[in-house]
Amino acid sequence: MTQNLENQSSPQKTVRLLRPSVIVLCGPAACGKSTFAARHFRPTQIISSDQARALVCDDERDQRFQTQAFALVHFLIEQRLELNRLCVVDSTALTPAARKNLLDLARTFQVPCVVFLFAVPLEKCLERDAGRERTVGRAVIERQHQLFEQAAATIRQEGFDQVVEIPDAEMEQVKIEIVFRPPARKPVVPARPEPRPNVARPSPPAVARRAPGPAVVRPVPAAPAPAPAPRPPQVQSPVPAPASQGATPAASAPEVSGAAPPSPAGPGPGSSES
Ligand SMILES: Nc1ncnc2c1ncn2[C@@H]1O[C@H](COP(=O)(O)OP(=O)(O)OP(=O)(O)O)[C@@H](O)[C@H]1O
Ligand SMILES: [Mg+2]
Image (cartoon, rainbow, N blue to C red; front, top):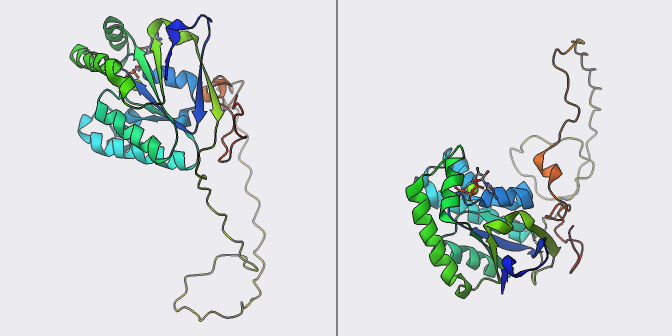
């Protein structure tokens, strides 16, 4: 199924996605994938190959550690899909092999796999690259743009459940709706540990194991009441406190873009998460 946003007459372009699913962002460097993802999804829903590279080798640009970075990307996708979470994969996804790996993961977990194609002209990518702090340069963008055009020509035969084309002019009008649809399999919810009866504190490591028998309840001396913490001296801060603390970019993310509280079971089939 292909959604071409250019063909829709409404000024706001709504894309409906299912949770759980794998959303693959596909586009050349500097086309705006990460900006788009940050605008429409929660930070925790985005699995970024740049961040994975940074996590494994401290440098998001170091291409020598692709294997390790993508192992981490795939591991995170697996963990999240087990819990019925949305996975937005922020990488270029320009090779059929990279896309097939993501499709295979989605198939394994029996969830939809959707690809977003960022159809941004080469000149605009070059312009955006030049205007950002971390530039990748003309040669990389030209090569990736060619790969993108090849991908765009054949991607509909690759088995994605939905191909969403996002022309550059439409990027600002896109609205994402996320709908929970439970997959055929059950999510893995870890069991709560059994409460330990009559044990006030963890016992020291046992030297020798006792044969199983009736529980022996030993009286445990009451812990002394904690001494009151000394009050810090009242110091007048020379810097006025900000009016609102704790605000994060995520707090201002649009509600419709997956801002509902995550739940393994979700609100129910077909219900909107907006
Ligand atoms: N719709 C847009 N209009 C104008 N500028 C944009 C738009 N989207 C992104 N940009 C700017 O373009 C630059 C590149 O965007 P971004 O980093 O999101 O690209 P990217 O596709 O994630 O690149 P990479 O593959 O290298 O990670 C940024 O400086 C960003 O602010
Ligand atoms: Mg990016």
